[in-house]
Image (cartoon, rainbow, N blue to C red):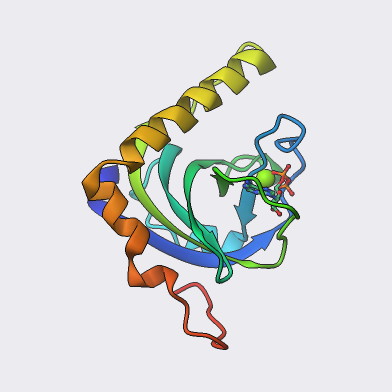
Length: 157
Ligand code: ADP
Ligand code: MG
């Protein structure tokens, strides 16, 4: 099941999503390319996860992540989107996003309204913050994975 593959480390370029308006909802999600998504183990089910994320050589922040069905590909391919729990001054399309997924929150759901969706995501964010303060998750924040050797070009490993 899902837990066997966790913690899961992943690195890849941030690409344009399909403009579902996440940013307009105040919850921008950095999308990974199709190639990165296809490298994910198939035993990681769709749903909402949490973990740590870092843009380029930047600081490591808490994140929530959605693994879902990609409407752009008629829901036959997955999408992986990371909302970093941090306020960035600028967008970071084209940069390398490094993440470690450490835990699972819930399956994908449909919501009756945008308000219901937003409050569910806000609860996910609170849950992620609490879980990530626990020692077993907190320790991954310091993982060497986040210390990129300077000047080295890194692809998804
Ligand atoms: P898209 O459909 O292109 O993914 P979004 O509305 O989901 O558009 O916005 C995602 C973009 O917002 C990211 O690719 C990134 O450049 C930027 N961004 C700014 N702040 C954050 C954040 N805290 N977490 C994730 N992405 C962010
Ligand atoms: Mg997005």
